[in-house]
Length: 182
Image (spheres, rainbow, N blue to C red):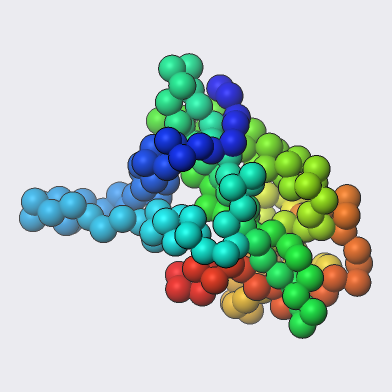
């Protein structure tokens, strides 16, 4: 497996991996001969690519032995508080189902966090499983005085601080604009 920055030629493969990773197991639509709609994560990724919050340097793919895309992760520009302190929102993270459970997601998250830290970013926020993301140093956002866009997210809204983090960064987190439509 190789982790590298996404290129323009990866876009279709990334969309396919994201769609496969988040596909619903419900096959009721298949019985009618129609294709199920694209998962919201694939549609979100399409919208993120064309928004002001897209950061190409923080979009990574994992490739398999034959160079095929087997996973993807992205961080986009977010903000914290009324002064709109710069931050990042992680996601979506996707690994093709045939490659899940093999450390692909782990490698992708480590790569994007390392790059974000190297670029001088202060923190990364995400909505996800505390059991999974805790291994990367993510903690409940409330521990840092950062509130989720939706209070119902509770402990699933998490923050990972990076080297440039300042404890004065507090307040509501705001994802890149396309997340508002999910």
